[in-house]
Image 1: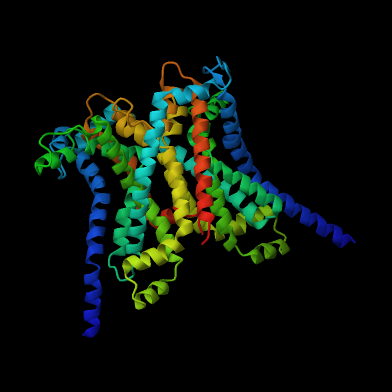
Image 2: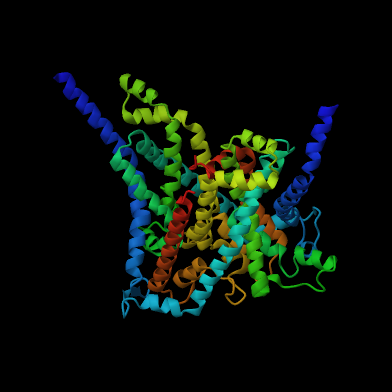
Length: 276
Length: 300
């Protein structure tokens, strides 16, 4: 009895916290709800402030298909993001493995230098990179899309930090068994570090899917358009059709939202992955 | 003897393997980050675009032009306005939310955390377009404000310099507060919960334990989020392009957006001038990051 009273007292003291959280949660979720409801309504209804789901979704979807190259852009975004994720994970985990498990003074210094790249803003390297990529004939190609983003100090740091948990005894045992260093990476390191790989994959895929400035510069052909570029173009007309626009935004958001709900833990780890 | 030389070669093999593993990543960063920034410095002393690049006269001309360019100065001002207003509000909100969600007595913690974290799942372009539609003259916000009588008639939020800036700040807060909260939650998990319980027994209330336990122990995390936020804000692009298109009349344009316009969007792109401005951004980012690390280093 007294225990129960204690619990309800604690809960009563938390009422302001609950109110604050409910407000914040509502503000956070509402734009998503509105996006989905707008995608199912006619643009006039959206402008009138209709908040319930409508029956216009099919028509909005059809106009979206008529106005844009939706499937092409979805496929492009998927293809580029997947390629970037695979390459980035391979290159950066290899480096993290090398920097941590073979570390010596020289490698630690090199790592410190590479970290400085974190401070270089994208806009500062944009023009030279554009020149480089176009000279190499890589405009509108998956390589042009991902080359500047494959090796990032963030991911290298994440793998390096997490490699501290990799047991050195396993490496020594594998060496005694006669495995090569490359073999150790693929057969021992990779399976043991799979949770780090999962977190790194989620964050890299999302970043690649969502990237906008760089694709806008190097993916100049309509055929190479990505989803963020597609929806940005949709909103550029004189008269914006909100139903169609939100249908497009919905398509651009579905893959990342699915990843978010299924792999939220990995996503959270991926964001704060390099801090430990 | 034989054994020893064999041992040496295994050692050398391992040494070589270590270097081999970090070579691809190192080469890519050298070629894709360090080399371009050097080239940008080089280009910043030139003028023109494409094959018609020539040395500017005097060499530092682009840098002089930059500080006389009212539009560039305005873009710097706007970026700093977003930085000085949005970043503190966002980080305080994020710490508060993390502190509240770290309370083990709270129910539905996972649900609230997921909701507040959800905005991170959207592309920057997506959320910019959602906010643009919500705050449009015939958008939902106007509809509600007129409906409950706060506004007499629909107001063009994105057509007025001040309100357009406020909309950008609101949108940024919406997108990034949950993101920063995740860092603080991770940081709080490293703090022994018993410290709070001991403080409670000693009579410390919520605010006291927040200021005297949470904030000092989260200091490294706070410094990191400040650096990340400064870095991100100085490079704002997607929101300026898609939410307000820099308008009305360039009153909300950010540095990155203006540099982009000078490089790719105008009839006569000027790579040299754009490179000079972008080098300026690089210097700003570096200086602010250094200040931050220095401030964070003073232990009292």
